[in-house]
Image 1: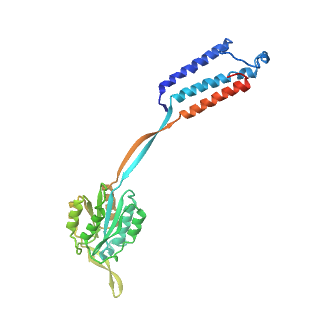
Image 2 (image 1 turned 90 degrees about the horizontal axis):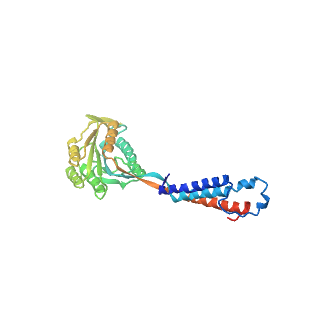
Length: 328
């Protein structure tokens, strides 16, 4: 607690002096003012309870005067309040859903691992708007920009390799992700492009899509998914589905060029753990901006002192009229 006008507290000297004078006069058996009491003829017999009660009105009046002075000094309390504003970024996740994503070099396979880790990434960034783009032989938007985490997670769970025509249209997927972010006014716009192969279809060249992203000031982080060398891939045979080792072919040079030309970075994920680490690293590089403003909130306390003073003055008057039978 502090006082807005602390210099007024010097006025407390006045009631202190009045109290000293009152005590001095009582000791000298004098009265500071004239009193008229209808009980005077019956109080000549010495000290009574009523004789002691007669000091209470003065005590109440002095206390009320002290409270009024304190109220005039305007006591206040202050509490520090912090306002936290978080400005997120806009992120588009462009995911390859070609049939090669069914390879079992990840647990249980590439597409499932990519979805599960992407869902963890989405859940850990509540301040960001996100979009999901899928591509194979062509591309489309699975989820537009939104902060609705439940919707993003549910639509990510629905991603599968049988949604669209097979193939790997990296350029189309990147261009669709750019289209989702181009009208955004966020301070930072990021595309995470995940694929396990090379561009072999689509109408837009990956380099062209990368230049468009660069023009709009978007950073593209590319992730090549697949083990080194060979990877087990489910193949339908007359005896059912069998796993056959197939070569892992990722155009790392293309993915590196896309990332570096836009100010991003290329990553290679060879297993679930490495893919999770890549998403974590991207999350550290692309942090939401947090602004903390602190300001005091004041609470006025003078009203309590003023009410207490009023109550004391009323009590003083009631005691004088009904107990001491004196005029105020």
